[in-house]
Each structure stands twice: as C-alpha cells, then as structure tokens.
Image 1 (cartoon, chains in turn purple, orange):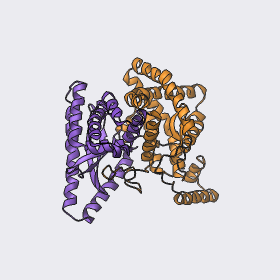
Image 2 (cartoon, rainbow over the protein chains, first blue to last red):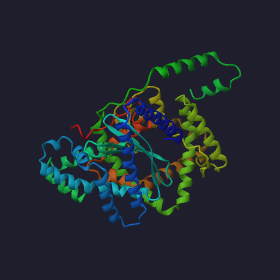
Image 3 (tube, rainbow over the protein chains, first blue to last red):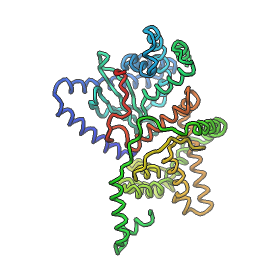
Image 4 (tube, rainbow over the protein chains, first blue to last red):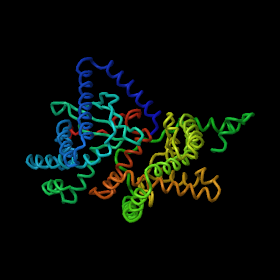
Length: 201
Length: 259
C-alpha cells in the first residue's frame, strides 16, 4: 500500500471521527474515545520498553504475557477463539483453558515482536464504531514500508481493554478462531486435551 | 488497450472513435463496482486446493526454504537489497499499464516518476532514491485491475508454485506474467537477467519473512486454512474492501461480548 493512499484513508477517518464526536452526545463518548486511545498508548509504550530492554527472549515472553494480561481482555479473546465449544465447557474447563491460552498466545505473538526491535508504533487516530472503539496506529519497522495496525477496545468487561488487533486487514480473533478450531478438532473436541496441548505449543 | 491510451493523450488530432471508447469505458467503470466479498469463505475447490497446498508445502520445505537460507547466508544484506530494488523497478512498467487500465492517474504518474528516478539516479534500479524523496511504489496487479472493472474475487484458489489466490487474482497473476512489458520488450540476454533478479528477490523475501512464513506453514494446526484466511483478509484490505474508507466500515468485526 502506498503512503499516499494511507494518508488519504487517514484523512477520511479523521474526518469521520470528527463528525462522530460533534454529532453524538458530548461528554461520555469523547471521554471514552480518549481513554481508549490512552490505553493503547500505554500498551505500546510498555511493549516498546520490553523490545528495547535487551533482555533474553524467554524473559521477554514473560514480560509480554504480563502486558497482554494487563491490557487485553484475555477471557473474551479466549472464549471467542474457542468459538461455539465455549458454550458447552464448564466454568473450571474455561478457567484452565483461558490460563493455558494466555501463555500460548504470549509466546506465539511474543516471537513476532522480535521483528519490532528498533522500530516504533505510533497511534494516529481513534474513533467509535458500534459498541467499541477502534484505535488506529502505524508501525514503522526497520527497512519496511509503514503498515496499518488497528486495535479494538471495549469497556464491556468493566474497564477499557483491547480484544482484537488487525494488522493490514488481518484479524487476530478470526485467525485464532481458525487455529484453535483446528487444534480442537485434532483433539477430537476434548477441551481438556486442547488445554494440555496449548501448554506445550 | 494500453497502447491506445497514449495516443488519446498526446495525439494532435483527437480520435473520435477512441474518445468514444474511452468515454464508454469510463461509464462502464463507474457503473460496475466489484461486488462486496462474501461473508463466508467461498472455497468450492477445497479438495483440489488442499492437494495443491500439500504440493506447495513440499516445494517450500525441500526447495524454496533451503535455497532462500543459502541465498540469505551467502549474499550480504546490501547485495540482497540491490537485487530486490532491481526486481521492484522492473515491476514498475507493468504497474503503470495496470494503473492506466484502472483509470488511476495518480498511481500511474507516481510509478512513472519512480521508474525515471530509480532507473537513472538509482543506476538501473539498483538503488532506491525515489522512496527517500517521497515517491514510494504504488504496487498493483492485473487482479486489482479486474477488481476495478467490477469482477468479484470468485472461488478461493491455491496455485501451484504461487500459493494462495482467488480465481480472479489467479487470472491476474498469469496475465501479468504473460503481458509483462519488460519481458516483452527486453531482448534475450537482458530478459534472462530480469528473470534472475526476480527469482533472487523472491528468495530474499522468503528469507526475510522466514519466521512468519514458517509459523504459518509449519506451526499451524491447519496451515491450509490459516494461509487461506490470511490471504483473503489481506487481499481485501489491499483492495479497500475492509477497514476505514470502505462502505462497510466494520466488516470482519467480531464481537466477543455478544456470543
């Protein structure tokens, strides 16, 4: 995607966000927009601090898991990744699955963050969409054209947490649902066995 | 078609027939926007596609991945960057043709100036001063041209040697290969060099994004389904069918709180 095109899109969304803020009742909405944005700002600041800390990779994974647990709605993401099977699972099964899933996803995406070393992520805009907020950021990595990174933030859990990340159109929740669905199939629908498999994945 | 457009632009005597054709085309273009992609993945050829996927995975495991490792180890980074720059520069004439066919003057002009700057100042495309002065590559392809002309993506298609695609974009890949202005105009030894640079650039890409590609192909529980999903989502994003700026702003949105 060209830089020009991105600017054009950014301009459109900036306009739309402006319209939304003026058209909707003032107060709560504008405040939530600001807090959604500041959530991602501080998540990114924490990630940047780890990336540039120079720690060993295993130590970084632990840090990423801590950041993930702090800023993401892990329970909602885990439930969504499991899909319809989550409805049949017992509370104890869901608890064990969610804990295993949190470690799994931190290791999986933590490995990806290696590519971010020396780069930076910058929040450019935020807007309300339906019942949640979309925070738009641009990732500038070394030797790469800047790319589009979006965060979906909701306060339905009681506080502001992100529940999805979209990288150049690629939706983390959709991809997780496909992958966890395939793993569950491998375990013949057994959530307990899936939980055990996640711990070593 | 590509040959006719310049004659409209710089011809001393406007050709009425051609102008009429161009006008009709512009009308047709505005009339037929590509249908929005289906909400569900449309993959009636899944059986065949999975076979091709197994073949592609084998090609990658035993040929492409080892070759790209060797390429990345033997050649130093500046040489790899130079090869990738030359290959990217050779893509520009084809991208300009597609830009014209898409009636996208901004993208076409941008690629034209990029080609001029990088071919001259950048010594045959070896260096990329254009990006530094704010003229990035506006990448496009014939699949996008078909999209602009109103063709939907059609069934998902994994192509041997090329990987994830759709029927529309597969037609685009083959058309771009056959109709590439560089391979048509370059004489014999030069066109072989052009092919060598493109292959080198592909090896460089495989090496550079090795972690990501390996995780999809070899660490996923179902690498076929993962590759399919990632391709379709990213392709629709590239074509402006998802995300801000498209008609459906929140498509692809999953609400984990309403299940």
